[in-house]
Image 1 (spheres, rainbow, N blue to C red):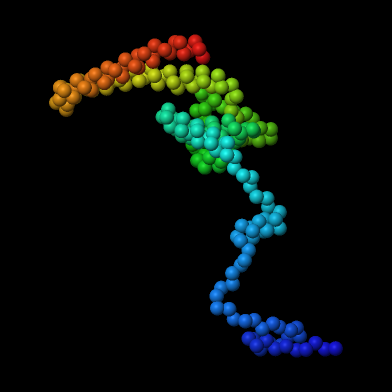
Image 2 (image 1 turned 180 degrees about the vertical axis):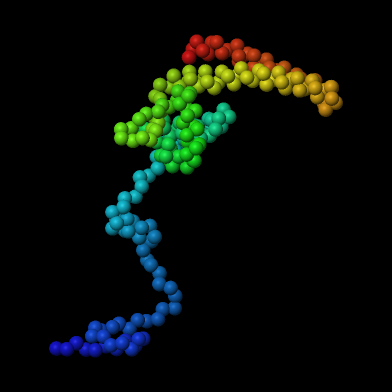
Length: 212
């Protein structure tokens, strides 16, 4: 039995298959599927797995070390790198550190170099991989001793020289008329108080070294 011939009204072409007359719609066609559902279906069909959720503990550790380094006047990237590696179960390369912290590879390289000098992290080699990998040093006592010797102690000792320079500048300001005698007396007393605190802290350094 021959099939009926149908004529398309829009193009005038003949076809052996029946056609459906579409109705005109005034508004755009709305897809009822949510974008997230569509993406999940596409990933499922293509075999692509979604990325694992971000670690909340690691994120908070990075932020805490970031704030601590800000208080010490150290570049924030150093604290971020240490926080990331401290809660990483495996060594990370420079590329991975830069990607996870959203920093440049140069900042990652400079930060890891400084942390290695302080004894906070160490360089490790991976088999069949020429890239440098880094992991944290779990001996926190050693890290504290290294940080004290390489960072804390030099800064405390250097602060005394800065205070002496400020005091000399204050005397020069008085001679040049930049400040009045009354202003000089107030500022000089405050500097003397700060210098006394600095000398007291410097006197505690030998005790701190014995405790460490």
